[in-house]
Amino acid sequence: MAKSSFKDLFKLRRKSLTKSERRAQTRKLKAMRWIFPYAIERQYRVFIKKWMKDFRDLTTVRVKKLSKWKEELNPKRNDTFAEDMFKWNKEMLDIQKKSTSRKNLARPVLKVAEETNEFNREQFEKFSTEAIGINFYDEEPWVDDVLEAWQVENQSLIKGLSDDYIKKINTAVSDGVMQGKLLKNIRKDILKIEGVTKNRATLIARDQIGKLNGKLTQRRMQEADLDLYEWLTANDERVRGRPGGRYPKARPSHWIMQRRTNLYRWDNQDLFSTNKGKTWIKRYQSMTKTHPGMAIMCRCTALPYLDELIGEIDTELNAA
Image (tube, rainbow, N blue to C red; front, side, top):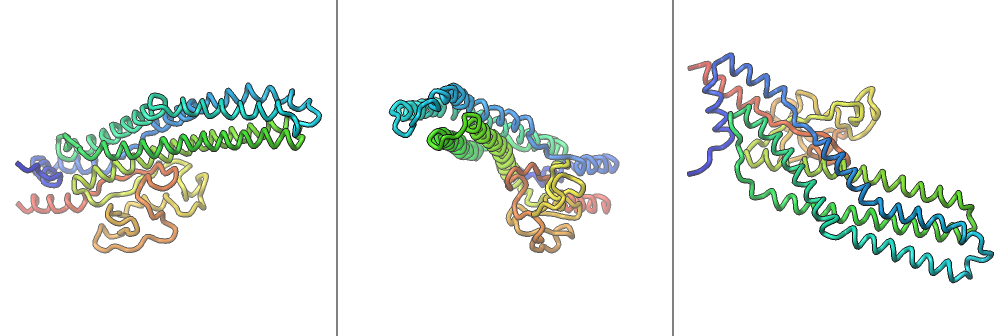
């Protein structure tokens, strides 16, 4: 027996309610927000930074030897310096090999993906329960492929973070000694590299959690034939383009995307509607040309659009 569509179940649910109950349901549905998984993003950011800790610890130990290297009259002809640099690089690579094992990287990254999926599923369940009275989904055979693809991409991003760190640290130390830089200046160069690495860890965590959350939201809505959505921002001072916020002049703007008159469709990220889907026009130059969560470090989310369906059902019921 074929499973009833989300819209059919919504109609059945709506018809079972009294007029006052339908008004209450409409208010609740309009007030709902599809929440961004902030706690998981923070957890992922902490994991990436801890994952890089062994590299930083080795750098700290090795930098202490710089004073010895600096005492050499001619480090360019000093075999000890070259041998030590070779040993340092080998130790870095050994740490990387250990850190990129399935136990230390693949499994933790997949766990983050699974937690994000569970969080996203709970958001849909809240909406589904209010709209149709039950959880719409029982099996989702497509989820594993989405999570595995995200896992592979993120393993590559994190390993790339360590590749870049090793290369830049080796260059900073080697060039610094060869050029006769003061020890304190070499340390400053290393601190800058570590600062950039921490910022990249933050970017990876927020960007990738946002992207996974966005992909899961889109897939779940489309699987339920909910093809239209309203745009929801994080509604704080960091939203791009928010007047009075941190980035009021940011373009493209995400703030203007959440206007109540705006409507979007999953099958075309270049279009939007200002008249409840009657006509569709190209997004303005100032608007982002992506779905929620897909731009770099985007924390926006989507809310299913049911106004048209609610109108059709209520008109039918009021005429009966």
